[in-house]
Length: 545
View 1 (cartoon, rainbow, N blue to C red):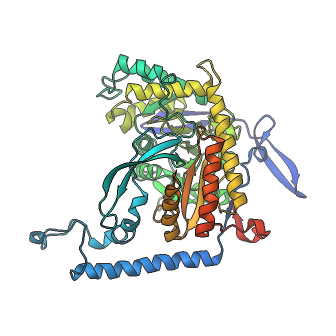
View 2 (spheres, one colour):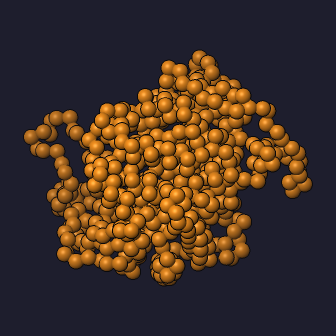
View 3 (cartoon, rainbow, N blue to C red):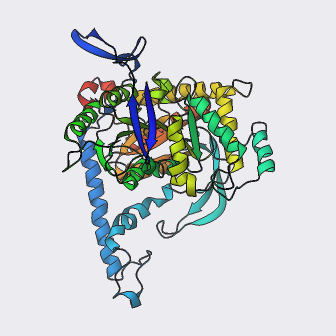
């Protein structure tokens, strides 16, 4: 048994658990020890599905670097033309009378934005004029100055299939029958609360939601916050500080990174989903202690995500828990993209791997994706949550969740749990899993390189070259398919991609139409880089270890 107490704002762990059992088994003719975390459940029995990251042919990488090199050269040439007055500069500049002042910004810092991003800016920030469900309407816009400014034509682009939103279970909806309780709570409590939970805005709705979240996750207690990003960035500093060590996955979300930096703790980054890298850092941290003094670390916190939003990969939770127990570290699990989206009943990666939620010290998640609302939660031991109520900046200073948003989360969570008297919630969870497997299998068969786990509704398709990223987004929009494309610096420079997010609200006809156009555009732009079908996948793939 592991209990947690708080002293001077520092969580401490007291271990009372019995020595873990192990047994010898033969795997491929080799003797191995399998660590057990419960009766009859071994680490090996709860491994994630095999994740493979296929590598593109060498010429693709060469052409990608060449493409960035060419646009960079033309960028310098255009800057020269602007400097001599042959081309108009549309960007904000320092005023002439302030030329002797210390500049507010360095002009070169905006080189990428000015010369690369502006040329393709029409593929982002598109205005929507309808419900952002599985199908939406876009406001048509055009540019007369190469995307520096846009003007609306007064027309709309109707019935665009939405494969970019995080609407995993389809709760971003306007069905009057489903939203009756939200309308009633809005009439009862109003739209805003205009205060913090510690002052005048601790509503019965908030307490009901927190109890519901704790029951849903199977933990002692939970606490909710009005912003998902701040749930990470403002709570991590309340858990760790100077003299503590954070071991962070290299692909963690920006909110986790910001929270770690604000905490003042020492941060070390381990390779993505790489247990050898993580264990090496844990062993070194235990053996060497803090720099210079070599005193033991006050706490060691491992930070991971359930589903990584750019890779579509799933955390190797069972193995991380085994390492966490072995080295007596803490585990912070961000389930922003996994809660509601994976697991037989939508309870996230802990259910997917059949692990005890008590083995995860801090469970974090958001309501912005599977629940069609906004905000986030921290869940776990009651002592942990009570500590956050007193020390979290989000709890002390941030405005509480608005009543209609709170009720939206409650009604969505009750629907998933079946507490509304029906089976609509579990139907959506199963439909999402079916859509995910179908969509991924079809894309692989077509010859696209896709990343991630077979259970992940986040499906990244590798496009690589910057010109093809832009052409792909524009070609898909012409076919009434709304996609999200991502490139450098959000991804490695040679791994630009389109990120599809599947939803339970997508029908099979919608997915087939998207796949049909994907096949067309893939052939048109030569995007089918996979060599699996040619029988050489063993030479072009590498695994995560």
